[in-house]
Each structure stands twice: as structure tokens, then as C-alpha cells.
Image (cartoon, rainbow, N blue to C red; front, side):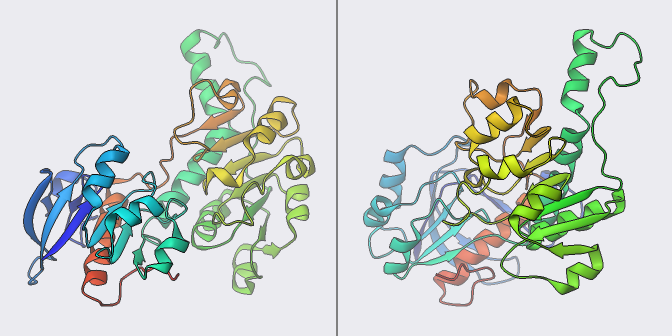
Length: 349
């Protein structure tokens, strides 16, 4: 029997779920108890007998509870907010064979230590592409058309009459959009923006993508050219040592004063002090962020004092269907890994 430790109030549902986006339609076994024995597997299959210990709160697990629960576990399901470092791995001991994270990002995992121990890692890419792309477009439109400011004006009585230039923002029609990282999510964002009448897409990445150039009227360019020529800059790259702090003072100085900056990748890609200065000084027009450093962002953070900065609480994948699909993939990664089989989405270490 496998001992599993779940750091999430997880619903393990029918893989075909998603046709109706309501959590009550889940055909699932829901784990609410801290510890019990059950059989995990898709309906109709034999499944795997497991002893499940679960942190059943939406609040982050205290460190002491994590260390207590992980001891002797064969598998671990964790969240992006759970730091799985050397101490956790040491406490788990040699029995830990699989870590499955409910995220596409993995900067919370001590990958060097995990690799040393031969532990397999599952993650959840692809299934959140559409939801994240949709949220990015929504955030871009919210930011460039100044929707939070407009809503506040209605609520506080600032809406006195109609004026020609009042609450004007920037539109996508005939614009140039720069995408930093034209991977799965970056490409999905660009495809959704094209019908708005975008004139041209510029993108950076590891290499050109000729098939995208023709489809989107896109051009593979240097980061400098992207910053200088884009009306909208969208960050959708992975967080790597090379991209940490990539969007900094020098980058913002190259951008147009009328440009809009959007980040839905990882907070650490952006130097937030430099972003604040760029926004406060009028170096760039506005910014929309779904990711920050740290998360959650303290309520007294300078960025929150700016009208031209829209910040969301990291909700890129937050649709019922997407989170369910992520959960199913997460559990299947874990079970396949424990069985020594090919995982649906394994992170290659």
C-alpha cells in the first residue's frame, strides 16, 4: 500500500468533466478527512490501494504539519505555494518516489535535490493554456481601457457628464503586440488577440517559429526591438535563471510612453521596483499583473497605490473546468509514477 500526502483539498473527478463548468457535477471521490485508506483510480478500473493523508484546509499548510505528514510518504501532491526543499525531502526519506504539483510552474521545487534522489516529478501544463490565455486578454483589455478607474468613477460620483477625452485609453486595432515567450500560452494569447485587428506581432524566444510568422503576421525579433516597437508587451515566458528580473529599468526605458505592460507568467520575471518607477514617472502608460513577488502582495505595496497598475491575485487558470482538469492530471501523474509507468505530464530533470 502506498502512503500519499496531499497538500490540497483535492477532488479527483471524471476526466471527461468540463462539459458543464459546475463543481457539483463532479463524478468524484472527495477527500475531506485527514487520514484514511481508499482506492484511487478512474471509474471502471481496478485502481491503486493507498493510505491518504491530506491537509484539508484552503490555508497554506504550516511548516511543522508538512514535515510531520511527509515522513515516510511514497507520493506527494503539492501546490505552487508549497516550498518543497531539502529539509522536506530529507524528512520524507527514501520512500518518496513521486512529487506531483498542481501547477505548470515548478520554481517551488528544489529540482537539484529532487534529481539527486531519483524522484519523479509530475506537473500540469497544457490543460491551463486556454484559461490563462483568456485571462491575459481580459487583463490586457481591463488595463488598456482603464476599467477599474472607470468603475471607481461611477461609484465615487466622478461621473458628472460626458467629456471628449475623459477616461480615454488605448485600443488594439492597428497596434503592434510584443509577446515575450511564444510558447503554448503565448501563442494562445496571440491567436485570441488577432481578431481585434492587431497589425503585427513581435515575439522573442529560443528560436523563430516560421509557422506562426505566417499565421499571425509575426516576426521573431530581439528583446530591444520588441520593447521599442510594441504598443502592448505581454510576458508569457517560463521562469528560468535567465529570465529572473528580465523586465527591468533598462527594458522599460526602451518601451513607448504609451505602451501597456502585461505579465501573466511569473512575478520574478519583473523587477517590481523598476516597474513602479516606470509607471509613476510616466515612462510607460500602464501595467496589468496576474503574478507578483511575493504572493500575496502586501496591501501596502507601492504598486497598489497606482491607478495605472491593475493587479489580480494569480487567477490565470481559475475556471472550474480547468482546475478540475488540472486535478485529474495531477492525480494521474502521481499514480502512474508510483506504478513505474509513463506519466501523462512528467517534468524531465
